[in-house]
Length: 572
Image 1 (cartoon, one colour):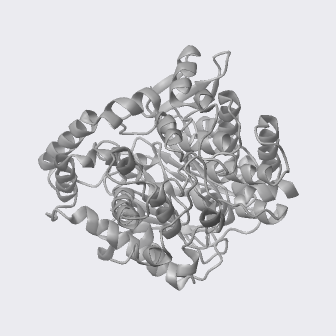
Image 2: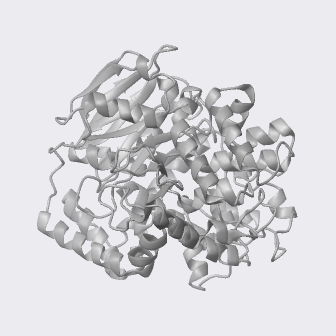
C-alpha cells in the first residue's frame, strides 16, 4: 500500500507508505480523509493549496466484479465544497494492480507549463513535459499517447475545457477499448487538474504488484457469491445489458418525473424517439449495440456503442443522464444529434449534465430555440474555442442564468440537478439539496423505492429517511470502488454479507455486519466537516426557489419537504 505524492510546484515525486489512520479506506473515504487533514477548507480551488487526489476503491484491482471505479477528490471550483467525482474505465484497476492506494497532486505549475504523469508497469512515476499536447482534444490525445506509451495503458486526461479552467470541465478516463469516453465529470475537477498543470495521468495496465489479499480463499468465495446475486437480479442481469441505463427513461417519463424543456415539464412528448428501446434498435441496425463492456471487472455490460448511419463510431456510452441533459432538457429528440453532443463533451472534456442544463437554461432564456440541435452543437464548440460566450456556457447553468438574467436555474451549489424532477420524486430533491457535493443523483438515488412501490414519490413523508439511507450506502460504494449499478445486488441479503466478507478477507480484519453503513457514515461525516469549515451552511442546502413555487405537470406538484427535515437528513 503506497501513496504517490507529486508536487507540481517543485516538480518532485515521492512515495510513502499509507498512514495507519487510513487503514481500510479507499476511494471516496480516502479522498475525504486526505482533504480534511491536508487541504485548507477556505483555499482557492484553483490555487496551489488545493490538492487533487486520485484514489481507486478499496477493492479495485481485485477480481471482485464491478469494482473498477476511481474517486477524484478535491475542493470544487464549481460548488465551493469538498468534491468526489467518480469515474469508470480501467484506471482504478490499473492502479490497484500496482498497489497504489492514491496519487496526490499538490502545488501548481508555472503558467503555461503542462505535464503528463506517467506510471510504468513497476509503479515508478515520472513527470513528462506535455507541450505537444496543449490544447488537444481527448480523442486525438489518446491516439498520440498510445503511439508514445503503447496500447496497454489507462488514461485520465483533460481537454480544452480543463485547460481553460472552466467549472464544468471533466476528467476523461479511458475504457477497455482505449477510448476517453468515461469521465469523472462533476464539480469542475478537470479545471483543478488543469490549474495544477497536468494534462494526463498515464498508467501502465500490466502491473503485477497488487496488495496481497489477507485471506484469498475467503475472498474468492465472497466474490463468487456476489457475482451470482448480481447476475440473478433482473435489473443488472438482464435489463441493463439489453438497454443500458437509458432503459429507465420510459418509466421515469411515465411517472411525470422526466424534467424537460429546462424543467418546465415532467413529461416529454415524443420521448419514444430517444428511449432505451429505440436506442438499442438503432445501434443494432448500425453495427453497434448495447451489452458493451466499458469498465474493467464489469459483469453488467451496461455500456453501448453508438454508430452513425454509415456504421462509423460516434460515442460510447450514451447513457440515461446524458440523453436527458442533452435531449429532454433541451427539447432535442434526435439520437444522432444527442450522440454527437455526447462525443463533443467527451472530446472537449465536459460534464454532459452540467453542459446540457446550461444549454437548456440559455434556450429557456430565449438565446436559442428549444429543439435546435445545431445551436446546441455550436454552443459546445464555443466552449472549445474559449470564446467569451463559450466561457459562460463552460461554467455551467448558474453562470448562464446570471449572464441572461434568467431565474429558472436547475442547480444546487452551482451543480446541475439530474434526470429526476424533485417535484415528482420528492426524495431526489432531498438528495440534491443535502448532498455534500451539490445536486448529485449518484449521491443517494431513491428511484428504486418508487418503482417497487415502497414509497410514494409525490408525498414528502419518508423522503428524508430514504435519501439518508441511500446517501450512506452510496458513500460506502464509492469508497469500495463499486459501480452504483452493481450496488443493486445488495437487495439480496446474501450479497451484503458477501461484500462484508470480501472486505474483511482483503484487509485481514473481521468486520461487523454493519460495516458498510459505518463506512458510508464515516465518509459523509468527514465531508460535512470540511464543508462546515469551508463556510457551507444549512442555507446552502436548499433547492432553487422555482421548485417550491412552479408546479410541474402532469401532477401539478411542487417540492414539499420542509427545511427542518433537510437540515437533519444527514445528522447521524
